[in-house]
Length: 436
Length: 161
Image 1 (cartoon, one colour):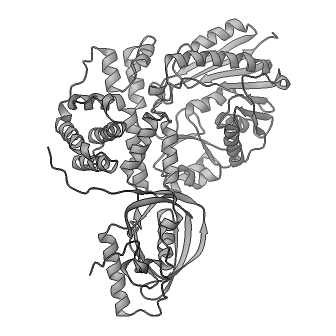
Image 2 (image 1 turned 135 degrees about the horizontal axis):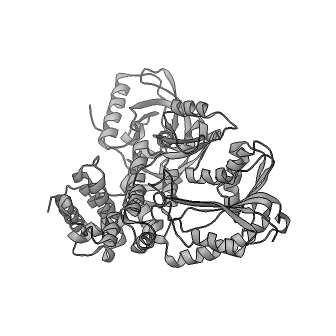
Image 3 (image 1 turned 30 degrees about the vertical axis):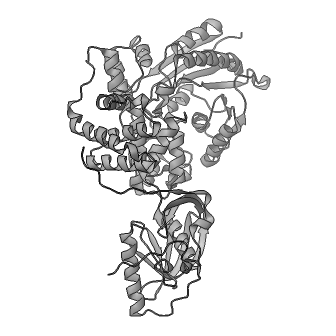
């Protein structure tokens, strides 16, 4: 028997799916890693690193290629374009791969994909870039937008939006943080075992574990291969969740006996967290739009072993008469432009547009107008997004308070990646102080 | 050490059922050595005796964790599922998508004719199934889902331009 696929071919397949067919990178990558489970740890790590790195640095890589190729990147055939991008990524960012191997493998792959007529071109461009990599000139730093655009591969409209609100240093801190490799944050399921026990267990499985500074039950883990293979994960002893998401339930502060609703709950992390904070009392309803999402929540509930929580299919834009003024805590973690998690969803920055952002603001307002009705007097409404965008965040809070005088703003928090040790995230907490 | 000729699809020897090995003879020991050499030289991860024209129930495998020698292998247990491309030294330049169990437990004799049990997951499980199929005259192409496709590399060193 022979192994039929090479890592670089799989990477090319994923890049084509993402850049040509519009698939989300994390989905395309997950599909390949699930399908080729027999790949060893090193190969899996290589595929993940090259795919994510190439997408993350794509504007910069194209800028480099265009300096050395007469045919501009946007005129190339998709296969050739993506072979070059991932090869230049390896040349520039991966010292562990010898440059000659990068060039040879790229040429072989072009041949294998039916472009043997272009192998001279691929080889020529890559050898040329390899020789001149140290002397590539970048846009001048005084041209802030152009410089940040190329250096951090960030679309200009996003930079303009951020620079109109934050100073240059803050924006560059965020951009730098997106490109950093970070450990996975997990929340201990304290119903299953103590934090100390879990840390021990993870260490015996060869995982590196550290405590997170923000919350006592949050840990940071790294050095594992396939998360779902960890025994502690299968037992439901922890839940993968960014610290910012944990802060949502933490800030929501459910008290024992409380009735809680998470109106857009999939995959269920915040709802499960609330159920845990209730210590087996009260009730959490974790809602989402589709069967697929509800199943995701259901799986996680089963794994957690908790009983004061259920997953329900319900469209958040539709009023559920039975829930009106029934909930002590409502969490509305709504669909958003996701600009706070660009480090994780590497291709989102190329897919999001200002127009979509505008539509999202409308959707967020629509949902808030419905779900605020579920809060009983004295109850709490938490609105959160994983974006850094004034209109979706502070703008919506201002709108909400104006429209709904029965609510009081308790707290507001905008987390910025790099400035805070978390994703970019927004959390606003309201209290219903009188009847409508 | 010797490299033997690898038979390719179309050769009748690949369709026949192999005979059990009753005892270890110098001839068999040399065959096993040659099979390992042949597999490594061809950059395979597994090779069965009929692929070098010998109708005996012998398999060699190395998925990167050292050589495994299986004489008269028997699958005791399988579970799970994996779907992915696989190729075969007897079907050069091609690959196709095959679903196999993700876990396989195998009983066999080693080169000293002592019983040994192996458990494999992922690629190793796939290799166990693929090679043991050879001993009963089966090739992976019978199990391919969809089309068999080309994986030919034009293997030439590029000169710096």
